[in-house]
Amino acid sequence: MSAPVNLTAEIVQLHAEITRLETGFYENVNSFFLCSMALIIFFMQCGFAYLEAGAVRSKNTTNILIKNLLDSCICIIGYWAIGWALAYGESGDGVNLFFGHSQFFLSGFSDYPRFFFQYVFSATAATIVSGAVAERCEFITYVTYCTVISTFIYPILTHWGWSENGWMAQGITSGIIDTKYDDFAGSGVVHLCGGSISFLAAWFMGPRIGKFPEDEDDESDEILGHSVPFTALGGFILMFGFLAFNGGSVASISHAGDGHTVALAMVNTIMSGSFAALTYLGVHYYQHGKWTLLLTINACLSGMVAACAGCNKMEPWGCIWVGTGAGLLYLACSKLMIRLKIDDPLDAFAVHAGGGFWGLMSSSIISRGGLAYALVGSIAGEENSGDRLTQAFAQLGWQMICALAIVVWSVSFIFPFFWILKKVGKLRVSEEVEINGLDVFKHGEMAYPLRAYGHGWHDFERANKVQAFSSKITVGEGRNTRIMKIHPEMSIEQLASVYDRSGNIIPMPKKSRTLFTNPAERKLSQMVYDENKM
Image (cartoon, rainbow, N blue to C red; front, side, top):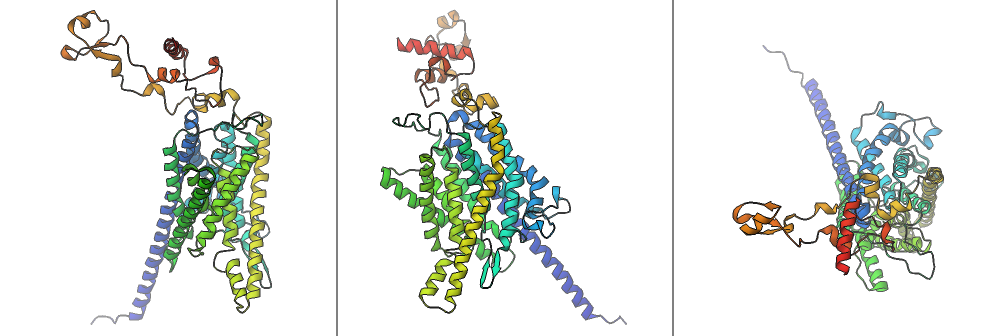
């Protein structure tokens, strides 16, 4: 006779096993969600690369591309070694208000999905600045600010705002007032930080040669990027990435309502960008009579930046406020930079600082429970409307304080590095290198080597037996015999010389043009040029 089965014990054991499987399943689902979103955000580096490469002249394309490549490489090392510990490492009660100081080199830490997600945010903050100093920044300067931002500036800001122990996250609690830093996906700690440093970097660096005339009576020559399609492609990639940037900030997908919040964040992000783009496009057409593509892309990105702060809890109609305001503020900041004669080739300050600041303010105005709701409740005479209005104004004031803290911290920490580099002459490239382009001098690699174009067969023509016999250079046999042309077609290098494509925006003496990389090419092109003039 078999022993009686203890059903109670088996049920308890079964329940424990189900709980274990459920916990493991949810953990894997959330990890996969975070890694998937992080991979899309990582792809934004490609978007930044295309956007910036298309917006600069062809002679600086390689320089821009290697900087965007190194963003990812430098940031991961700095954030792994020090950044994560400053951002989320545990520490003492007093110090923990300002920064953490444990888990350096990820010691004793194993939540790698969370680390990877935060790393791609750090890389985004660092790469913003490269657009503001494009075409004239020394390579050592780039390496310096990229390291400092990803290792110190951004991690400490995230501790202030996103760690539960940070002083901005804790806020102020007094009576009916309970304020906390409200920035869901980084309008402040990512974009306002990067945009503020962009302003300082562009100011320190000075404008590109020819951007602003020395004589106020002269008109400035417009410095155009070399590829509108590249810029547009980069803009589309960034728009795609922003959906994951904001939607992925939910950080989980296994709890009830997570999917709804992810979708809401994505919808609000694309709608805010759309309202910003259309607003700017309409204003620009009214002022200039042109439907601009490049600036509309920037305005769209500015609207998406502004959506970062409150995209998880504002209704879609609020995107009208967020997007329209971001588009107009982008326009104002862009014009301000020109008025101040600060050269920002990619409008990094206007897009990220302008959009980031507007997003921080909008999250406490138009989001659920914000100032707009409190004002409507007060007008309608709802119960406790006065207390809600007080709380809303207090929250808006706290957001302003936090925005000021972000700007002051970012600018003050990076300032000494720029000052020292300028004093030792390592901040900006020489005038000769800037005029002739950074690609060849700094990297030895042209993005578009002229000698690589063409199939080469234009220099040969069909020949009969007599011509083939008398010719010194022949290709092929029989009916396919070809000889060197007496008057070969002009090469691209020669054509460039004829049309005087020096690649510069200011007139230059003939002796200082460096279209070609060796004297033989220059001499040959000059000979063809002289023949065509005769």
